[in-house]
Image 1: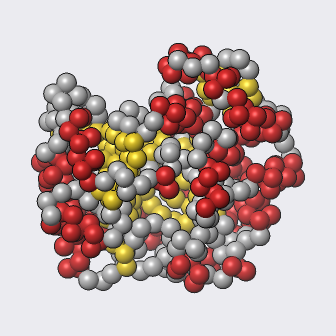
Image 2: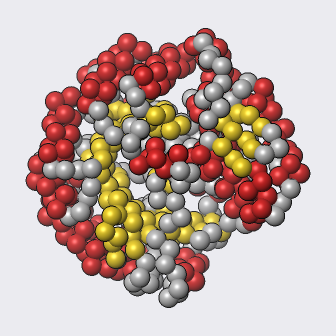
Length: 466
């Protein structure tokens, strides 16, 4: 890693203001707004058939989307459904099983699941019995690697010890807790009644049951947050000592998520205070011994995420940074996204459409995308820079049979201001992100995005990068 000269907070603030603009998080490339109905149900089936060969031993990653929540968090940007009707949940599980059954029929039995993640919504809104039943159903239809990473997003509110015991017995070994902030005023204004006590209790229970990894999610830029109030939360998180920490930039996108209008815009931190919160966060966690992976992720030095970055096996998918590179990802449930071979496929975002598709005997693919050569090349470059923080130019030229300087002539011109600002360095052999540049990974990646200018002209679709 290139060690750039230490910048003052004022210099960093100037840079952050300069580069704070709407942009993708690059959990995929091309990004989801490029998906279209041209790639639908039939195309998804045809591409699945191509992978269904006896010689295919590619590992599998499964994502299971559980959209239901008990209450609405005003800041939330996820695809979720607020309900207290347990029958709706039971009906959804019924259709999940239909999708799992159909998908498994296309997968050769020698292929192993090395990663499974349940997201939401609130996966632990399911009862322990429902969790046990669904997990058992999945494991009867897919072969799991003995050392598979099996994770789930946890909401400490209404969580019981029985939930965690069931998860552990069912093979889950990692949990991710949404904390957002410990400040009671902030939690009240985002409609998340989650005190510090119940969060600590959930973590204590998890550790007592032997969960190998605990991740905590925080959000900066929420209403009423200040540098001083958030620093108190940071101190408490350091004391709790999770394996990984994600500190997400609050995506204020009321044009996409109308419920965010329930928060008062004037209560959001100013741009300057938001930058100060981010800088303080990076300083506190790195001083406490966490490795700044990049963007919004921190991990302990001995965590698999840190090791994967050092060994250049880190990966990004729709759940963010991942240690399981090279897997075919299959999304299960409404709105979930699959990525296998050179294909992306996303399920229907409405329950009614999702159900109709399986009632008709097919998959629920609503939109998708087939990558071109240029897409594959640009994805490789973006992912390696965001994960490894360095790009071996000669390796790219060998792998894709191109002249890097000629192929990316326009891109290198776009990168020049970032080079001038010491965010990335370039020579004939490599591109390398500097220490400061880790905060601007989205901006660096945007220079390689062939579709960004077109998409941004059409309508606002992305949150701000800082």
